[in-house]
Length: 188
Image (cartoon, helix red, strand yellow):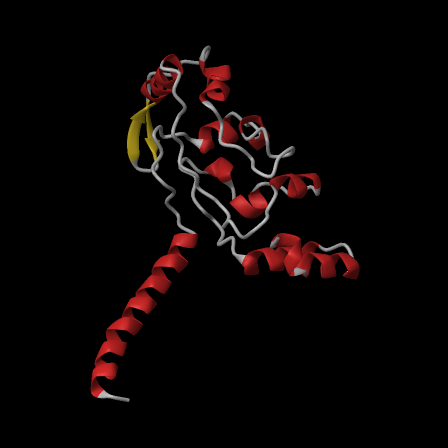
């Protein structure tokens, strides 16, 4: 190997290693993306015991669960204005009444709340929540104990290994396992 090639290969290798660590860690994180309104799943799904499907209402009829519209929020919050109390939202103090006022402002302005997706699948993967919900899987199996989280974050690295492990553990028989491990089941 020429000396110039050796000198170039060391920084290039370092860049690839750093990118690997970045993308590996980006897959799951204990800190979710910043949202326009600090929405607490701990309050809604935990304390108030709203089922996931109340807000993510398309999960059993569509490939995508749907991010709740401001209309869905206002279904409750046109009557519930919130307590005028401070709340520790993952280390940041917020006022519940002020945050609900932001929801009402989006509604008054006829603007959607620009929520940031937490979990997504790559375009080459055909994944449908509907099929998994109808099979009886609980949301927490993939998404973790969302009811104990203020800010939702990725709990699992939902990559091919994660899916294959679940398919292997939950196949009813050998024939179904063969189908669930077939590339074309998810990639078409």
